[in-house]
Length: 213
Image 1 (cartoon, helix red, strand yellow):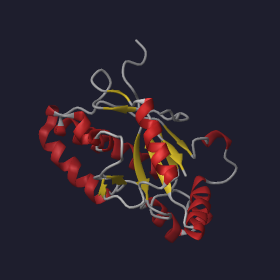
Image 2 (tube, helix red, strand yellow):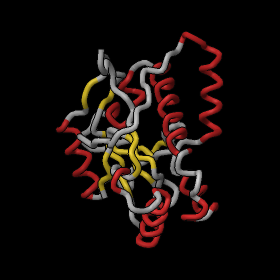
Image 3 (cartoon, helix red, strand yellow):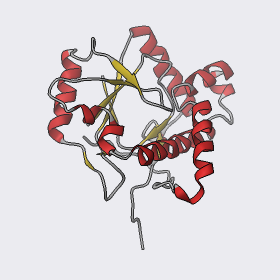
């Protein structure tokens, strides 16, 4: 009875019920201003790591503070970055005072196949959530801007390739999460750098994250 495992949640701009304009318009406005002012966005995982519910753990508040302090101090400006598969997020390869596995989620999980499968499933949930914003996006931001905004989400080509792999596995892989739309909540974690807009701006917000400027 009830909810027995975490569920992915989506809400446009983390407040869909209160938006006056189409979500794509907000995304376009954000992209324009970030590009104009050279703003950098940091997506900090403040939720779960090391595996799905029952296996993983909450991100450490101590480590979250290390990440936020490093961002504010500019310490992550000159480090090397790795690209997160499917989502294209740039992840710092190192951060002083932080264990390497806290930055690289696949290392924290310890089960590469389970991690890759869960990442693939989450990417599909994002792609499906974005579809609802494309129906009348052209009249709000234009077709070109709408497609540009979508580049901030998962790579469809990479996703389809990954899904084809898991389709061959059949019952060997069962996604641990099911979609449910409701306002997302941020909490405390690992830093992922979203490149300057418009590449990393998308209207469908997901759970377990918050942006730090």
